[in-house]
Image 1 (cartoon, rainbow, N blue to C red):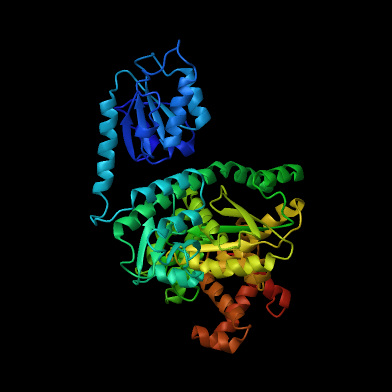
Image 2 (cartoon, rainbow, N blue to C red):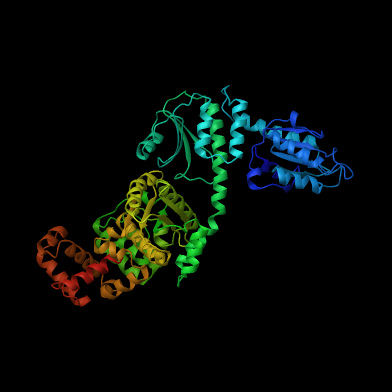
Length: 591
């Protein structure tokens, strides 16, 4: 139970007079009621103190309030709950003393009895104890008090983990994320490579306990892992996990408080006319102002896309790449199953409109081929997936050595996430290598989702960050095209083919180009046009070989000649010319 939980109990009607987020997040270990002028010797660390303030009077010594509150602070009390009935409110001198000595102060109204507060605390603690394992072990009181003090004074997670296991003989223990990143380790535990750590978490050996937090995800959740079973009593391990969870929640709140600066940096970079002065200010606010070089990384996540099954020759996997292009992929998939006529009908339906396309799907595609609502509607990733993409990207960046790299991550309105990484001028290669190793491990936390990232080229100053942003997004589009249902991290150096180059072109531009080049084969008309499209694609895929195309389509070579001549006549392209072959190939890739 934390101090701020008392404020949420409506039946008590308590009011916060003073206390910051850190003080309100302290654990409540007990409750004591006193009106002694110096109660310190009767208090235990972690207690809240109920006082009717009978010891204070307006005519008395003004230093009384300071002595009383300083005694609470010295004893380790986590809050003062001051009754309002005696003086009609909480005196200003008591409020000032609580501020000076950093003791949270809550007001108890006249209609709330101290007994009600005491019972609320005891019932809450009894409920928490009843949910714990029934093992008779528990953290010794002196150890718990020491850990609470360390947490309150801002101890690092490494220090807390080491202290928590020190009294147990320092057994080997690692605090790990789902991708195998080591957050902390106890005592003499040897370093664990991320891949090996991820395997241990998914294995059956040893003991693993999840550290509960409010907003963690499968990517960044913490797990305590001991290589041997029975080294630490279950209840002790659970209590340690609860302590580390409190630290995690505190850090998450601090991160959330910095989100505004990250969003401002992203807005500055994405502005139609980037302002270098604004960008420099946003970098400084995010703690990245002293970077000698910067690299931008874009990421996206599509829930469930990895569960799709490749269908037919085109390898369609259920992704909705917007508009009729996705439906046309379904048409060609159906053609690969032998449903050429149904595919042709679907192509005509697509040209007629989205409603007609939806009606034609059941006939065009075999019943065992799944099509998600997302593919039909072509909707963008939701804000929820942007948050998950940001968590995945932040976890991957967490594998970078903190001494050499500093980064911030922000969610993009379009459903993606973006990171700005500051580093030394020669560290870009290391960044790409570490991310390349970490990305599959992060994806393994949720293998059913499609997870992609694009890395821009490093730039040496804030003025070029808008260019780096465009590069990262282009590389992200290439990653999606290369592995639509799996995971992929791509950089500009991965743009080695026409398909990856075309993938980064905006969808609206691709659609116009495709309609311009292939227009006569796309519009409503003869059903044979769908067959011509399939023949054209196979012909280009087989290096314009008549014989191999005929063999692949199980046709006579004269039929292939006739169909290609029809394609040339309808499109105005001559397939004996290289530039015209490239035009048609690029148009096919623009789906």
